[in-house]
Length: 179
Length: 206
Image (tube, rainbow over all chains, first blue to last red; front, side, top):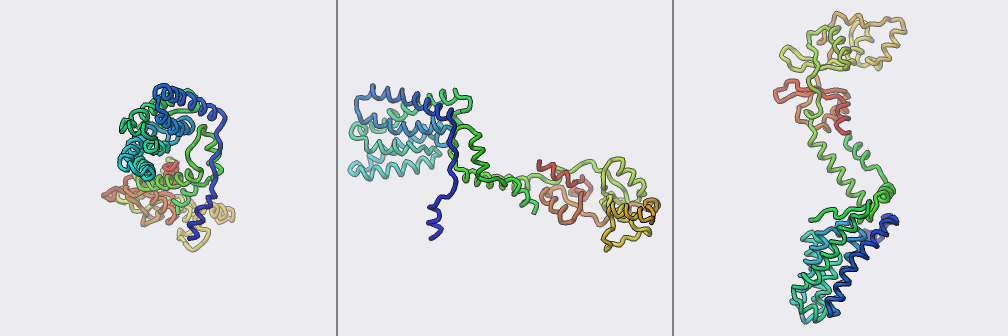
């Protein structure tokens, strides 16, 4: 029992801060990655709800431009995590259309489990699954196409930018692995 | 015991060292220093385990082996050892089997005692300094007395030997427990295949 509470103390050291060049490259990558995605979404989709998905991409940007060595930020995880979660989010809503609260929790929890199982854990996937449920009528209308557009299309644009921009920096390389 | 020492060598760094290393690597590393330490410790245990099992005596042994025969005069044996700059040789009997080991120590043991009788309980038997002390004490330098002896008269036996397939961790343990510096390696038919010296073990790890 005491062991249980002792574990809450933490007590281990936090990692060091990154240097300035890393900060600047992270900024540049995120700026160049989110720009085309946001621009396209605001101009192509008149439905406001679809633009919600940019929230999930913002989270992906942290990883694929800010923590590019992380296993969570690799292409397999980025693409796989979003696609798996999108499908599960849509399915979850179809399963519990009358209980959005349940569809939400079931969708996110199942998305995490599925990402683990497929070695595609990518934290923004949780948002992608959730948005499929709470995005409202316009997103529900897309059905499983939600996984291809806007999710898949946006992810590929962000990945393309990551592969270009992250490798411009001398001290950086991306990805660590593709699959 | 050996493996513990090695373990300590490989994991003897602090979390501060890791944080320093993480600073040296540019880019955000998605791992805490203590997680890294844990991974490293487990990885080095696995590496040791692999070394332990994968590097066998036959991989590090020296071959061909310079040998002496039981019937070789110890003058010839000493010349041969001096010529090859080695401090010990396996001794073969007339069936080509390893019958004993002849090392510097066997000579030293004899040289401190005029009559050639080894008094094992004497503390100073067999060290180079005890011979110097004896010479200075005007009891004479006694190497000449050994002239008429043969290898079989002074060699150590029965010899400690190992099989080709034994792991070098086990060889290291034998060096330690038997207080020896070299060990002949035998093949499946108990014929001499090679020899391992302490330094060969060190080289295998570096």
